[in-house]
Picture 1 (cartoon, helix red, strand yellow):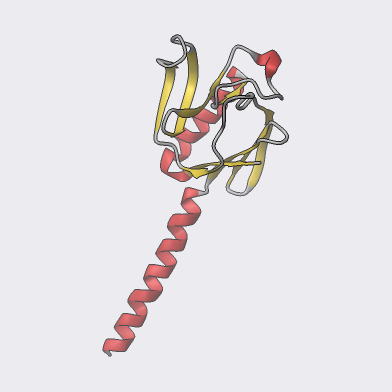
Picture 2 (picture 1 turned 45 degrees about the vertical axis):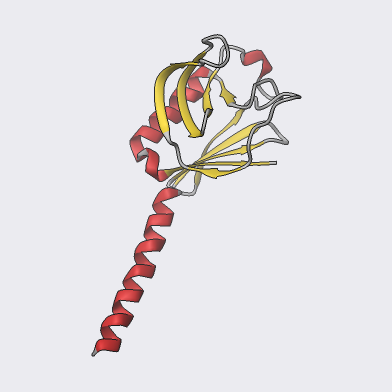
Length: 143
């Protein structure tokens, strides 16, 4: 009986850990540095493909996977002359996905390391993240 209970507990832990992992991937914003694009998927279905701007020469955009750490409808960069960062989704220290007014530069490297989006797209991603919950969203950045 004891073995049976231990087996059931282990099976439940495996099932629950898989459910937690899949919830964390409910909304994925995948940034491809080489193409300067973001693909947004919800529940495995592609919703959007957008042009972005990431780090220009002399700066870096980190690669990896993160969940958002904080979100702000409007943030002003204390590091870069109080530059506006609408619909900011911070994912790694001071790195964030946010809107930009430099839409003519989207599609090529132009930032200090953040992921810049058209303001309308930043708003959409921000709203989607609020809907599913930041804990169920992943930012994935690859080369």
